Image (tube, rainbow, N blue to C red):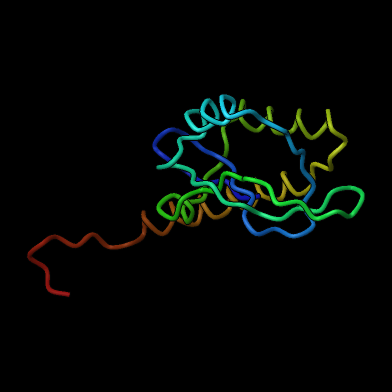
Length: 130
């Protein structure tokens, strides 16, 4: 799980993370269209088929929203409300919250590092040679 900053706010992206727990939902085509709008598809999130392992060990191909390249490398702290929703979902489904909280701590650290670098980086105007 990783938090990424966009113009619309901060969003989670659970990319390529083996051993993560989650919840699968069976959705209709209408549900998917509504989710597309909610998730900002196709500009904020794309869709990928990923393979997940069920509790019984069965491998299942499922559709997952994954953050697009332009937003992926911009870590940011999630909003309080968004994080609360994810942690509530974890609690409701018996999923450990440690990986979520670790991802938040990492995003806060990376965001602070980026802001510090931006404040210390010398400003160059167009007339200065590189």
